[in-house]
Length: 258
Length: 276
Image 1 (cartoon, each protein chain N blue to C red):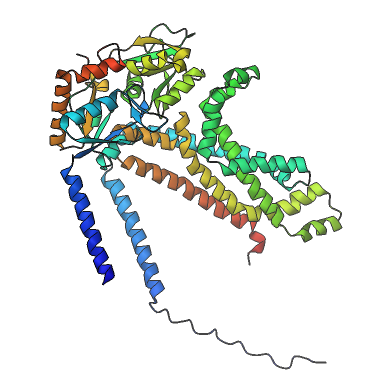
Image 2: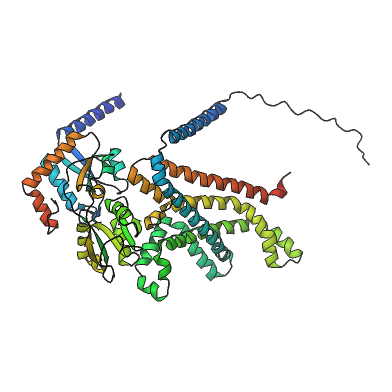
């Protein structure tokens, strides 16, 4: 008897809880990497910071939903989205044809070109395939930059790292002679203490097929409602100055691109 | 004085137990059926979703990755076997200093994850470039391949040393005494009497250790050595097709299956005196 009463009370409580949550703001779980400063960084105290995170928060505010961040390995971030671990990826993911076959993208929220950085004492003067022939070139694996290196700089000895942190360690210790990544990511690092070893060699010409149209927000295929909400929110924060504010907080240049 | 008067005639063997369908037998057959169905389904899936385009594009990568995995494991296991002998002798030594050194070595390498050791050796030592250059070791530690080989060798040597020590300790003390009674020198005793008997005991654990190394080596892509697993992840990142991992699993299974058969042959060879 007692047990039945208890169960009844428990199920009533659960019902009340779920109903309470439903009436509150809708929760959108955002997947991000957290190892790509200055765009998304998992700080030592466990908080997420960076341009992507601020943009995500601004978008969620605009969409009047509650943002909840989930971190994932870069390699597993698209499978994580497809498996429903989160509802959208805001992690500086370039909109490419290969990825479009798996997920749907919003319009871009920024677009910056790739660049190559080298140690200060490097003898390299230009970033062409010929000049980089036989040079140990570091890149983060499964990125548009590693694809770019594979296709446009095939003569270089490409080394693929799980995150950007590791190639930074390796170029500082002199194991590799150059790294390729987003120009903003490289500039941020070069300006910091850790990047004192190195300098920017050159910015590269983007290839629309490899680099895509810029960084967008990925959602599961067919989730057009969420995608359109994001698109509207991107437009809104572009117009009401929130985007500019976040942009200026991190960068000297406008990263939205043309 | 007693003499055998009568020999009992040979009796027929007792009748075989009736092979009824006991519960455990039914469950056993059921499980076997599930396994067989699973393998058939896997095979059909691989055949059915065979994509020659992907095969042409990523097949060569898989093969080069497989070759890297094999090279890494074979070389590190052989070097580890050589290194394990002094470590095992140190572990058995009555000398306090040697004993402690070997103990600490084994304790560290068995007690910490291989991935941590690999990371420490590659990225950790990378921070001491100046010091390594002075002693002329930088050319070695600069290359991710050598770092991987170094880490794997040190790791497997610790495990192999324990296998070797256990196997040697398992040989009965009477074997040592018998050899001593025959006046055999210590090194001959070790090589011809102790080691062959120890090897019988050690063979299976060695096989396990190699299998663990094959699978453990899959982490090596974190230091940019693209082995079978690294190539798989690369292919997956371009196709987002989980089949890429299935192929990797098939390759690993094939390696382990080949090793298992080799080990069966070795065991038959080592224990041929026990066969009737």
